[in-house]
Structure formats: structure tokens, C-alpha cells
Length: 301
Length: 238
Image 1 (tube, rainbow over the protein chains, first blue to last red):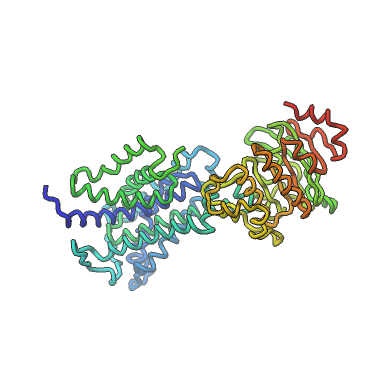
Image 2: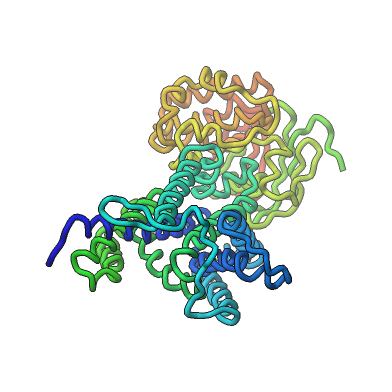
């Protein structure tokens, strides 16, 4: 087997590129699971919705409104799509999930799974199942950069840097600020936090909105890289759940670090034994479950 | 319906439920501004549940809880502390493991402008100053108890609900808590103590309520305790 350093670095970059999406999605899942104790199966579908919001803003909205010249581009989409997806998430929490907290978490899991199927069904009905390219990639991020060991698409490099910054900014807010300490306290003892005079139901709604908004943001970043398809979330979310299990349910740092690390490991596997690349994460998940059932960063009880 | 001005807390016919189980069966307690009362009784008698009911931490409650004349029984849980100016120190202290000591201290939002400043807090509890960067549950039991009391003094609460603050602590720390509670009384706080340790509570309180099976079965003024020691021992003996 001919393995050289350039090939390794190249696959590391591509692996990292996948890893940032794992990290962003598992981060949102971890925040939501921490406070709400809900395993949000709709997370992949919300990521897909984020990508579609970007696509619709650029390619369809103008046509629907009879203003063919209107193309709302990538930068506005980067703000609008997370807001749309996050607001939709808050509606799901307020109207549906809220009724299920006092029952077994399996019910909220099934509910979010149902939401995912409904969203997929809607987009399959109106859009091409095999995917639509997103043409709204900004001019400034087109083309490639030469990294020395490889030429790498500028946009992918931007996606990596941007996502890593977002992940660590979220980690910083949660671990180091006042608002984060309220969130951590609410995750631990919601009843007591409520007794101190903090509006926990509102906090729960906003947290779910924020977590799903992150999924929407990841969707916008993914749109120019992968083609926008109704099933893009369903394919990704299975891997992301494995990442969350490996990192530890509810651990913020665990979600980010294991997301990035597993992307890298996946990339490396492509170099050394390509047929295992798509299963290596699940293999690691099994090992972690056997050795540290609460995950690498989870609190072992 | 207004309570007389001197009553800060007036609970009448309070019932409470956890799920289907009916835990309180009509609690009646009144407490004047600046007074200290205790809720005495055996484990499981309903003393902790009485405090939790005041804070809205039960599944269902009925009856009447008036604080400074305002009815709180139907108020959502997060509005009770700000409206009633209540500071709640739960059983098991409720220290957050994922927050450091100072984050624990700063967690409860201010309820009124009358709270103690951080400097005053650290002056009253010097141990907490040293421990402020350590994670909450790595503090000793005594330090955690000080922290649980300190964080509600910061908020400007006027009514303190203190649940078993001496439980499991060394005599020297119980003595510190005694000093602290006396200082709080001097400062005009109104306090409800749930206590197992009658010798701690007896010299502090103005009045003692005995709770059994979710009801108030007896009530003694502080000056009647001596004469009724036999009855009290009967209530509290296991």
C-alpha cells in the first residue's frame, strides 16, 4: 500500500470537514438532551430544513413572489435559516414536546422521530429526492486555496474555520458565562432553579430553539458542499448519534471534541483501509459502550 | 382578603400531592414579620413537603398561602420567590456540581435591593472566599451548607425557608450556624426552620409547630416548651 504524508493530510482535511458537521449537530443534541432530557431525532431533518431554507431563499423565493431577479444569498441565509429553523424548533417544543415531559423520554423520542418523517415527507413531495445543487455560494468563497499538500476548496476551508469558531464560542458561553451557569444549573436541578425565580419553561423553549438553530446553521454551511436533498439529514444523523454516544450524552465539550476527532478518524481510515471508513465510527461506538458506557466525556455514574 | 399586616406568612388548609399520593392534609401555620418558627416532626411527616409546597415544587396544591397579604397558591413556581421575597435552602443543600462555588453563590437572581453584597457574604462566611473557584460539590458538607444559606442572603429575600440545615454536620459547624441564624434574626429576617435537631432550634424559635401525617397536630410558644417537654418528646421520639 502506497501511503504518503500528502495523502494523509488531504484525507485529514476532508475528514475534518465532515467532523465539523458532526460537531455542530452533536453539540445541539447535547445541549437539548442536557436540559430537556429529550433525544431529538428531528435534528437531522432540521439540518436538512436549514439547507432547504438557504436553497429556497436563493433559487425559489423570488420565483414564488413573482420577482425573478430576487436571489437572497449565502450570507443573509447564514442568519435567516438558523432563525427560521430555531423558531420552528420553539414551536415544536411549545406545542408538542411540552406535553410529554412528565412521561417516559421514549415518547418524546418517538414524537421527534415523527416530526423528522413529516419534514422529510414534505420536502420529498416538493423537491428532487436525489438532490438540488445550491448555486448561492458567495463569489469570495469560490475557487481553491493551495495548502501546500493539496488544493482545497475555499468554501470548505471557510466551513471548517467558521464551525470550529461557533462550537468553541458556544462552549465558552455555556462553561464560562452567567447565562451558561443558569443553563448548567437548570440541567442539574430544574426544580430548584425555578424556585430561585428563574423561568425554567421559557429557558427550555429558548434552549430547544438554540439547539435546533445550530442544526439549521449547519444545514446552510452544508448546502454549497453537498447537494441539498430531503434525505441529507437522515443519512447524517445516524453517524451523529454514534458521535454523541461516544462523546457522552449531554457533555458539551465531549460533543465538540468527539465530533471533530471522529471526522478525522473517518478520514484516516480512508487512507489506511478504505472499506472500513463508513463503519469505523460505529465500531468505536461499540467499543466505547463496552468500556465506558457513559461516553468518553460523560459523567460515569 | 387581606391578612393582618403583622403576619408575613399565613398558610391555611394547605393540601399537597405528589402524583396521586396526597401528602399534606391541611397545614395551618402563621408567622409574623421578623419571627422564627420551626416545623418539628418525624421523617416523612410532611415538613419538607410544606416548604416545597410554598415554593410550588409539588405536583398539585390547594388551600391558601398568603405572603405579605398576597395569595400565592395559584402562582407559577418561578414567580413565587420574586413576589414573596423568599429564599429557599433545600434539604440536601441543592449545591450544583457543575458550577463552582462562586457561580453557585451568584446563581439565584436578585429579588429586591436589600440583599447582602458579596463582600458582606465573604465577611460572614470567610471559608467561601477561599473556596470560591472550587466546584460546588467538592466543598465539605459544612461549606456547602454555608454556601446554600449565603446564596439566598445575596438575593434580598426577607423570608427564609431553611430545611434541615444542621443535618449531618459537626457540632462546631452547628455552632456557627447558630451564630449565623441569630445574626439573621437581628437583621429582621423572617425564618421557617425545618429541624430534627431540637436542641439547635429550641433557643432560636419564637414558636414550634408539630407536624404528623401531613397535619399540624400541636403548637407551642417558646415559653411553653419547658412545661411541655414530655409531650414534645413523645412527638419526636422514633
